[in-house]
Image 1 (tube, helix red, strand yellow):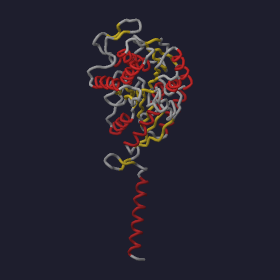
Image 2 (cartoon, helix red, strand yellow):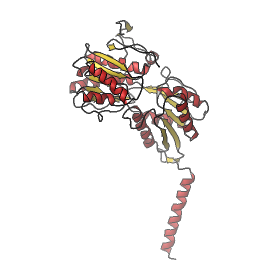
Image 3 (tube, rainbow, N blue to C red):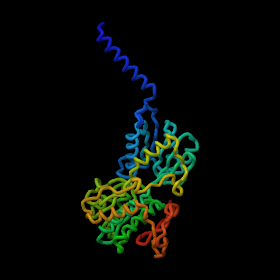
Length: 379
């Protein structure tokens, strides 16, 4: 056999040995320093489909960003369309823990108690629950200050309405939703004191049929702008069908209703997921609440919340106003719930110059002046 043949065989054997060695390391990834590390399994639980055009899609985009930014992360274990009922939620969360996921993100309010319950059985797993308020040694609660983006979108809606009636398709009567309605209304009233925000409840996060019917009822009541706290773009599609305008939510909903959607308050979970997973891996994360009951509550300054690109129907002067108000919030000089603010009865709830605390905002159970509607008891 020639020397050349021996060299080729030697190269082949070397490549084979390297491949076998890599396989023996469990298929680890490469970290930011280009060092091979063992894969870290991260699981996700979603209330809707990853293609819902809203809430679950926004979280799944964050999951994909996490895998891209941290190659040592395996975040392929995610479960869609998981009901918030305790039996279903606990079963899925347990399944993810049994599959070896060391970090599990549960991404809907109703998963809070199931997450706490499952976490007791898996002390070596870190659980993070989105939008709830309960924590434990291995359970954190995270959310974003969406009320800030809601306020900015209210400026857009207030400038756009002609009828001075803006419809709001609301989900569940909990502080998160109430806070969003109030922030949006404060934005509307800042630029258009005559406008009113009419609220219709669906008592569901994602039911396109119910959301569409609610939007149509608001349109029949004279609304010429429709906004929403719904995980489906159905209200925007109803607005477009009626020749009216809208404000989406969760993800950029302009693709679903390009003639209606002026902008959408959106979530950008990717950077938060990356920083959190890194902190857990490095042993620097802890579940201690930092903002009232939340381990994390980031705002516009973190980029976790924001506005989608404006539609062509939004004037430049409105874009400039939104940017000015955005920078005012980011600077820390002012925040949305700074007085004077009155409630529906005209009574001052927040005195002039006073700012609501995080705890007060997270427990909000009243409507500001300008909202037409009532708050039913949570089901």
